[in-house]
Length: 238
Ligand SMILES: NC(=O)c1ccc[n+]([C@@H]2O[C@H](COP(=O)([O-])OP(=O)(O)OC[C@H]3O[C@@H](n4cnc5c(N)ncnc54)[C@H](OP(=O)(O)O)[C@@H]3O)[C@@H](O)[C@H]2O)c1
Image (cartoon, rainbow, N blue to C red; front, side, top):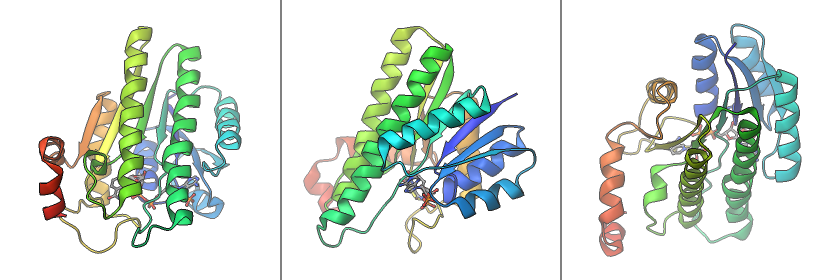
């Protein structure tokens, strides 16, 4: 049986990923803080699924909860670390910035590390992490969010190198969306992708065990340009 865990399944991309993976026959472990949303989701999905409430900002506790869920499910071949926060950064407010660091950096690393150690001991597996095209620039509007996503992309890249060196069949996939229509995104920014379409592209890339997935595909070009663009020019545009 195909079994997957989605961390951050209670909303947006994680919720839709659960819907699309369950339709493909996956049995799922659903993790997030809001138990009510997870129960509602599990009730909608075909088949039997597992729920584990977790707050990834409590990194060590969350690692123990992920391990307990893996044990309950018996065997897991895919783990998606999707949990993330994108707070507004109008002022440089430490409480606001710290939450993003706790969830997008500490929580992200803790969940990814536990997953990698599990796959190494299992001898195979697939880790997927949600970063963002925001990893490719910082124009000062959301400095902490950009920095947390740069961490996520760099960390996943490093884990991928370790997986390759281990010679084990472990895949590490980095997903970098531009804008996807979820509760995290306000208004109608440029090239806002409908949720269902965006997640369908993610699922295709995951099934092909891609190293890197841009959502939608045109953001690959944007990321490439951002990587070579001088900061002064980026500041002018954003
Ligand atoms: N939407 C976009 O345009 C976009 C673009 C680039 C990257 N992304 C990335 O995609 C991922 C999903 O975002 P989304 O747009 O789907 O946002 P969303 O609808 O707000 O979903 C965020 C998910 O993260 C979970 N989460 C947040 N804090 C958590 C915590 N402390 N512990 C456990 N889970 C936590 C939430 O669950 P609970 O609140 O129930 O805990 C929820 O399930 C994020 O990593 C985001 O940065 C999104």
